[in-house]
Length: 398
Image (cartoon, rainbow, N blue to C red; front, side):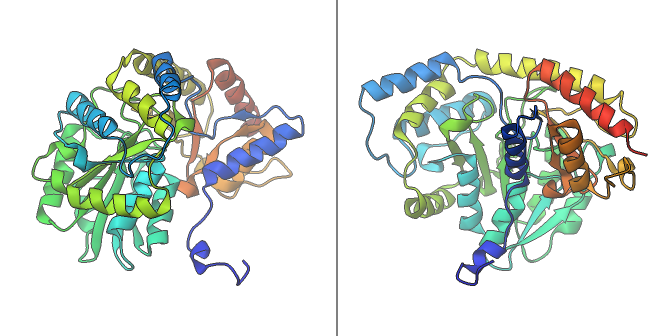
């Protein structure tokens, strides 16, 4: 890297999810039919009542700068949603709206983490978590989880990872990439550990809340004695098929909320005015489109698992939420088709892309080098085509 550029750029990596999508686009530009199972984006359109609210906002001339933490009526709508769906009591001053949940996460990490602070992150984790900690100058402490445990950690593992330097615990449920969902009982066990360590903050990414196949979403903020230390991150991208609208939010104690507002005031200021007005309709309106989308994801999950079980060598549990599977593919390491040898998950992902013309994401990016993430946020027809190709490509490996 040029020595004229900031050393900050050397601390972190480009997201592998975006890199694989880019490689897929390059192959498509060459006329190759690439099926995308890499990106985490619902293949649904935004609900009509949300689009109507945005159109009305345009006609009503909501086209000026917005308050840094978001319009008051939107922050009130977030509070309404949190009470309705999660039985959590927050006030507008606890809410900061940002340009996507990724910015919400960045605000929270930068507001909490200093150089040398340790941030505990269970594996597997979304690719951006570790890189945000590195940007802040913190140290990532991974807790390795296992496929057999559905990639969920225990209270004992959490306790063992905590040191005097631990500042934040960062996790997601439902989880990207594994699809794991923590139950109330599992969260309660972790909560008992946090009660022994009152200086640790809990950053809870709940962006996949509505895409849950096993029951009611459980937030770790439900434990009242911990709530003041929990920062909930959520948004509209996944549950409302609004990825391009770019709106996320946090719910946190007022000190952290004000800190995030201060940071955001220098980076981006307030989020798009039209998106904010549409978000009110999403959060307070009919949830039927979101429920129907989750029902379709559930059907695709079933189909995907049927197809994966027909492939010898893949070890995979059925995801409980989100729209990914995260199989262990290490049984293919050391194998070759005569031209390409698979040594790791990056080799596996590139082999699948170049041979089967299906894009996926290597597990190293998520902290699990034996795994690969495949999305089922694609049509059933494309899912069937993709896994037929993958099966054929893997059959060539000896």
